[in-house]
Image 1 (cartoon, rainbow, N blue to C red):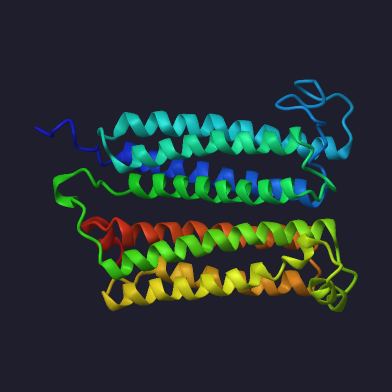
Image 2 (tube, rainbow, N blue to C red):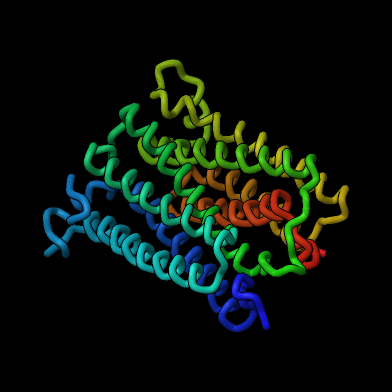
Length: 321
C-alpha cells in the first residue's frame, strides 16, 4: 500500500503541472500589458486611486488610457484567483515539505508584494511623465519583484513535474561549480532585467529622434540621469551572457547538457538580436513588448536550468539526458 507521504503521480499531477504553466503564461501576458501601460503613458488612467479606478469599481465612459490601465488591473486580479487555485491544488496533491509547496507560497508572497508596489507607483504619482528618483528606484524594485514572481511560478511548475518525494527520486548533491555558476547567472540576469526596465523607461520618457541623437544624449553631461544610465543595460547584458555561458559550460563538463540548456542559449541569442533591433528602431512600443516577451522566455528557461543545477534529482537528470 502506497505511503500517504508520497506524491501521486498520474493524471492529477499532469493536470496541475499543465495548470501551473497556464498560470505562468497568463502572468507573462499581464507583465507584457504592463509594458503597454508604461510605454503608452497610461499609468495614471485610473487616477490616484487603487484598487478602484477613478473612484469606481468599473469606470464609466473611460478614455483610452483608462481602458489600458483598467485592463491591466483586471487581468492582475484574474491572475490572483488563478494563483490561489494553483496554491490550493498544489497543497492538495503534495506532501508536507515538498519543494512545490514552498515555491507556490513564495509565488503568493511575491504577488502580494507586486500588488503593493503597483499601488505605490499609482498613489505616489510615479506614473506617466514622472521622472523622479523615487520612480526610478520603485521601477527597479517593481521589475525585480516581477522577475522573482515569474521565477517562483516557473519553479512551482518544474517541481510539480518531478515526483521528488518518491523514494526513487531523492535529491542528490549538486556539483559546487554548477551551483556557483547557477547563482551568478540568476543574479546577473536579475540585474540585466532591472537595468532593462530603466532603459525602457528612459526610451519612453525621453524618446530619441535618431540613433545618433540617442547615443549623443547618453554621453551628454546635461542629459537626464535616466538617459545617462542607459549604458548600464548593455553592460549588464554582457555580464549576464558571460555568467550564463559559464553555467552551460559547467553542466556540459558534467555531461548534463540537454534540451533546457539549448533553450536557454537559443533564447539568449534571440534576446541579443531583439535588443539590437530595439535600439536601431528607436524603441517603438511594439518592439519593447516583443523584447520583453523574449526576456521573459529567457528568464523562465534560465530559472528551470538553474533549478536543475541547484536541486538536481535522478528524475531531472533523466529528463535532461
